[in-house]
Amino acid sequence: MGMDEAADEVRDKADEAQDAAEDAGHAIQDNPLYRWLVTVGLVAYGVVHLLVAWLAVQLTFGGSQEPASNTGAMQELAEQPFGGVLLVVVAAGLLTLSLWQLLEAAIGHLDRTDLERVRKRLSSLGRAVLYAALGVSALLTALGSGGGGGGAEKSLTGRLLGHPAGVVVVLLGAAAIAAVAVAMGVKGVRRKFREDLRGDPGTVGTALGVVGHVAKGIAFLVVASLFVAAAVTHDPNRAGGLDVAFKAVRDQPFGVVLLVLMAFGVACYGLYCFVWARRPAHG
Image 1 (cartoon, rainbow, N blue to C red):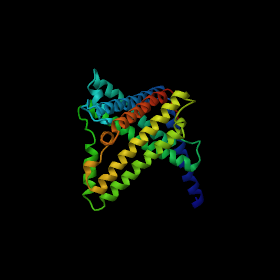
Image 2: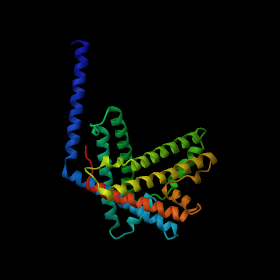
Image 3: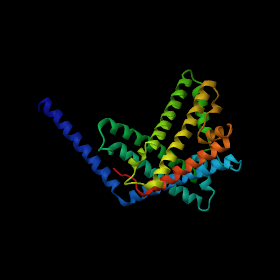
Image 4: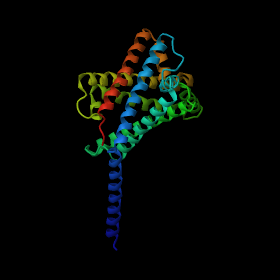
């Protein structure tokens, strides 16, 4: 067998393996239980955002003991009747969302051009990591091992700033968060989120998507600015997640009004997730 024939055989086997993987992925996506769990996951994701918004409102008026963050939302769920069961359902749904986006990253977006397909698949991979982290957080909270607030971000930032190149790494992290923030805002303003949906979400659904995505973009920009401040001042206490960002907004002039508006926007994103749950685009 010549070199060309051997190369052709290798390519044929690779194509067959890819086709088999795509067939298996599509079989999973067509499974009714899988689709139901995706819907449950999107509803759970919406509930988490509504709880974060509620905790932010309580933070505004000094009435919350939980951080206004994803972790705080999980703790809030845990304190409800049958909270453990609810958290297990939330975890199952969110981990299914992670699987959904992993499949999209591996075999999805075939209707896109090569460059656009790469961009969309990387976006799906990022979502998969986010959903997996939230799912694990829900599971750990159900088991009584949940973490708290923005402490993890502060601790990691503190360790990074202790290294010679730490400032650069933290600034790069801030740039990445800012890039996500801008992408979220653009997705809302340009209504690109409709690509994630089957069919037209309607006037209300579109409005919720626009306001929700823009609000999340603004919140992430605040988080990015906190990491920049931590890097510039070498003070890891200035870094943090959404809970720290909300507190930073509250402490500004007209901070109460700004925080209520941000909470409203995050709540809009939560309600948009319910619209998304009714018509997720698969494949």
